[in-house]
Amino acid sequence: MKAEQNRELLTTRADVIEDPGLRRRWLILGLIFTVTVINFVDRQTLSILAPVLRKSLDLTNTEYGRIVSALQFGMMSGEFPMGYMMDRLGARLGLSVAVLWWSAATGAQVFARTGLQFGFVRYWMGTGESGNYSGGIKCITQLFDKSNRTLALGIFNSGSMIGSTIAPPLIIYLMTRFGFHAAFLVPAAAGLVWIPVWWHLRGSEQIDRETKERVSTRELVRSSSAWGLMGCRFFHGPVLQFYWYWIPSYLVGVRHLSMVQVGFLAWIPYFLGDSGGVVGGWVAGLLQGRGMAIRDVRRWTLFGASFVCFCSAAIPHLQSATVALLVMGLAIMAGNFFSANMFGAITDLFPEPQVGRVTGLTGFAGGLSGLLFPLLTGWLVDHFSYTPAFAAVAVMPLIGAAFLFATARRYHKDPALI
Image 1 (tube, rainbow, N blue to C red):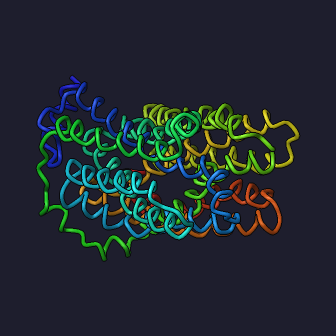
Image 2 (image 1 turned 45 degrees about the horizontal axis):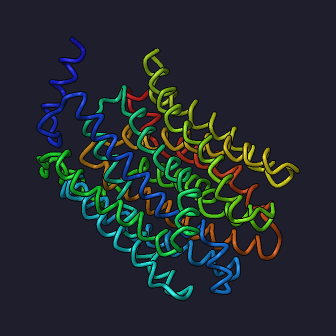
């Protein structure tokens, strides 16, 4: 009976695929997960090759931080336009455009010869990659009811850690076997292969433009819930980005590992962290199933994960590189647990026709902090050490969670969430 009710609910929604069967929904989720893996392999390529490229291009940590910030600036610039496109055109077409755009940029990195050229191409790449989350979250909101949605979001978001896990050995292998050009071209080709599969499986969409237009972008920007989510992502976004973009350089520069050792070992923290998103979604669903109010589910999960993130502060003080890698994995696991519930909060506070734009707004905030924090990290590393950077990422999730619940008034007033 419950399955029949869910089927009826799905068939009445405006943005639903022609076949709303359970198997097809999970296949589509698998495709969104897969493109997220590809996305994060693309992002990680430069950071893994950074020790080699920085030496060949004679880049300082500050200059490398600028290249990382160029990607984040591109994501900040593209977040809202991509989110608007997802709401306007649907995730089928929107994600196809986004993946084509960022795959072309990924391949174009083979032509970069200076730090400035890498910065330009990474900016281009970021404007496309920003569509991954707005399109993915919108599609999941369409396909899954609230009892399963956070789990689906956790699985989708875990693609970021799977991509980060396989990227070091894959990129190092491609570089040592075929040269660094292959390390850029293979992920680009994977994105191009994904597009026709997605186009076929996703099926047609009926876009409910009338419902979407009832709430203007100006009204969304004025919403306390939007600002709460933007603040939360502003503080949490750089945490995982720090681990994506700086750990290979940290392992080489501070822990004195070789590039081959990085290829063998750098995947460990990401592998340990992979489960965080799935566990975060599963715990949220379990608490909901036991009758806990949505607001309290988010409080327990977000604040609980925030306190676990404090372990980041200990990493520079650990003598053993192996123990440091294990603690990094714990911190990444907590960060993914946090992310699954942060993205779940978007679907708590806003209906599906607004999810693309709201995700874009939060992505803009995350892009802004992602632009600023690498600059700060590079400066701290050049003038002090990695220690203050690890301390910062330890406390930022707690600040983000506190900001969300202090600002988003709907969590305190809406009977459906209390």
